[in-house]
Image 1 (cartoon, helix red, strand yellow):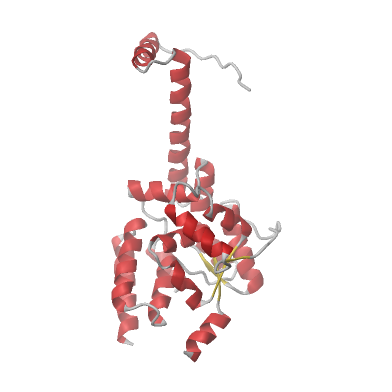
Image 2 (cartoon, chains in turn blue, orange; image 1 turned 90 degrees about the vertical axis):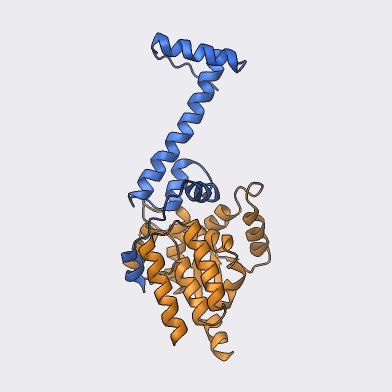
Length: 95
Length: 174
């Protein structure tokens, strides 16, 4: 089911969407929808990573927020070189 | 030999998904039963076998679960033991560890702290590697290879890398 959502954009931005839509052979709303979905996924991932790096949530919780599997989350972290949230103090505490 | 048998019989390691994924990536997973039972919760099982067509490690993990090399223990989370900062699998891992007097194995800061607050003594992938070295299950060279790979995947900080290399040297000297 879809719902209508109205929002205002600058004319220049609309023009940019139209130009790109034409290049990609898409209609304007399909392109905006595609960018919104991709942007939302990226934003969710960035938010989850931020919370994880700040040690506010666990890695599993972060993957849950990012709405991706733990395998994918770990793989993306490795690709981006994001360090594990464990500190030396954590290790000293348990050894 | 007897000492190793004693360890296997006595130790129950309850792994969360993150630790098992890392240990699978560095090809150490097959050696884990030599340190004790490899236990996971139902949620951890689901996390491990998700995305089976995209990640090669998943097929290996599924095979181990099907063969019961990795054993799944059913558990119901109760309200008393639950942290909102952890995922369901991590919470279940800690609860199973409490009930089975097992050792939770996790590679997460929040999960470690929660486990410690629950009176447990958690381990991480790095500590599992040290245990494998201590019990002569892996050689010094193998430890170095596995640890370097783990440090690379986890982007471990230099102070942590140095700390574990020193610990490994201490074990070797004994």
